[in-house]
Length: 476
Image (cartoon, rainbow, N blue to C red; front, side):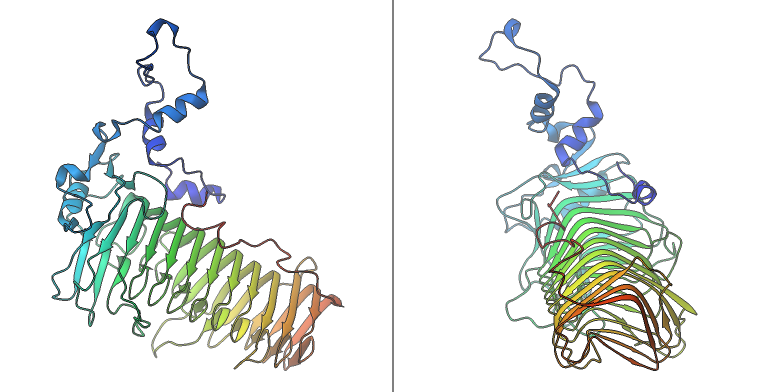
């Protein structure tokens, strides 16, 4: 199993071979793994090539019979879309030993998760009484909908809190992996955005803060959370990796890392993640540290943001399309007495924001200093409503002095391409601007420094940021 620590050490991602190939690769030296075709005399069967061996083992019909596999069907799971499979799945997980895989077979219908309507319910509650270290919970095939865990429509009390999957941080969870799973909240048509705290109604996946205070090793690979009335993923402690993961059509945030601890740094690691059509933000980073690599967000009602409780946020290779509000923005909402870092570190590297509703990016300090690496940024076609420019730097924000970075701002209506104000300093190597209604930039009590400035449109998506179908679940 590829651990989170290996991911952080390499910082380059890992290859997923799918559930069947993953399990059988552990017995690759088994001389009996290849079985001749019964229609061919045994003595004339040619030795298979390495590629043929891989293809054959991936189709092994007896995978559920392996000793290191716990099949949820053996505990009563049906997957017919009408039988409540919640308890059967829980029993299978609780029966698994470290190093074993809880096997979720592909079905034509879904595995139903049902509530009794009492409120404050959890369909899959993985608390401290459940041994989770070294356990993999995996669907049979890496495809959306192949193994779907779906909430029974209307079975939960929509006026209070409910969760599809809840992990409790009362003890450190070391080596838990979810793979090849689709979580569907059966969000009713016309359901509006969830409440302001992001948890009303039905939330998808939650890691609840507990006495362990972070330091987990939890990985989601090739997973989708869709159609929940509230947030898709909320992580309140450090130690979570999402690799090739999608949040779609939820009523609140797509990804909501809120780990205040720095036991593991970064507290949240997102590699090849996607958030689309969310009723809140695509990504709402509230506390601690996070690193996001290869990201696509689209049509999220509140764009993407970070709060001033955050110590560090790194965003590398991100494309934001028609996020309603801003592609990225700093958010100043916090209560009196909240701890905020004296200096906040923000990295924006190869970020393309197109067609935002308000502005492309806003970086604004408030009771904290922001040191921002701002490298290879493109903002295109923004209305600049309720904003001072396509890109806004204000209130004690400063970028490093460098000559290699590049800033492109094209077609901002109702304002300049860049606004720099209130003691902010923006250093740019090459500044390219084109057709910005309020001019290329405006500096009001702030400073924009550049080595080269050109009135030119260099072309769309200059830095090669991801497309909608190139990142997220099942895209490898």
